[in-house]
Length: 304
Image (tube, rainbow, N blue to C red):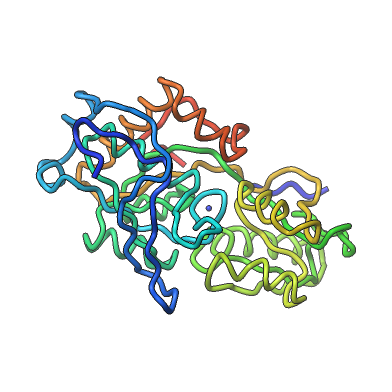
């Protein structure tokens, strides 16, 4: 058997748990997401957290996150076409509230987020990012969730695919710029080669919302995605897809990212830890069926 290792709330703020997103007519990335409360819960700022916010950001009064929409349950637009929601969105909004800042979200392609944050175009990124050593060389992370790779296949799993040697020789979709593309796909194919089996044919898909389309059309036989996203894709497929049985591949931590040595990551970490300790974090996780992925301690740049 194959064993494999494994993606204006101010100082007296009311924290928006869902925000409004204004999408451009073409639906492209880098669209602005102005803060507009859909649901909210009262929360004061936390003085200890506020004290950690870099002076320039505190003076500006807002915290801009880059995120790629279309990746439920982490970040997506509700059926009304305007309301931005998801675990990452709610958590970032709650964290910004503790910091005395107004959160803003910019829709960006996944593979552009790290370069955009490194260049200070945006102050932070939150989009179900896996924390790994290569990324930690480029940006700082504050961890907030655990995850792993899971598969998504057609209902009934007619090809018997799981994240093991059964994937060999099949067509598999992964998201551009994700760790499923850069880490898991080569790892799976290395195992196929060592077992003398044909490699899987990995197709790199440009955007998250195109992945279910690729599976439904038969362009790919399976998807490899974050475990939380896998369940959501299956749930929203109206019985067309399922998550095959088996262990997660490559269990990892997810983190929000900031520019290297900007001083923002410790403030985010402190905010995440406060939300963990006061129960808000668990409530958000329960809302998005991610209770099995919660962590008890947020860290800055953990050893991975």
